[in-house]
Image 1 (tube, rainbow, N blue to C red):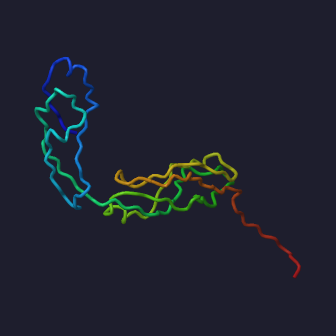
Image 2: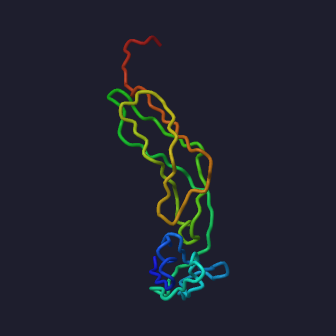
Image 3: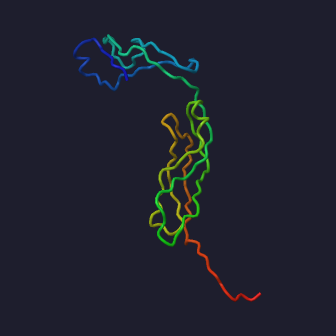
Length: 169
């Protein structure tokens, strides 16, 4: 965020909505790495005619520029709780098994998995399917895959051991 001081007729300034102002910086041809960008009145969009940008504070922005990259990442279901006594969670399978994630090249290469929204299994005693969202690790990343994410959760009776004696051979 930056502070912008405007100068102009009082009637125009009173009618302005601060949310109509934006700072625009063209970074299309910028090389990757750390950059300092000088802000000028030309960078302020949404200023009405007859209103002048008197001050921008701060007048410089320090930016880290990275190339955007996409990669398919494995989805790992997040299971919360446990089934009731006598039942067991056997597995949870995400469909699709992987989704496309987008972010800075420097961070996307380190992503090894996507978690899902929590899937609660308390009081569940049979298999079910949950439609959930995928949660990338880090605010710089986002899931760009538009396919719905379903997790098939397999719950059944717990395995038991039984001894049967006197079995004819």
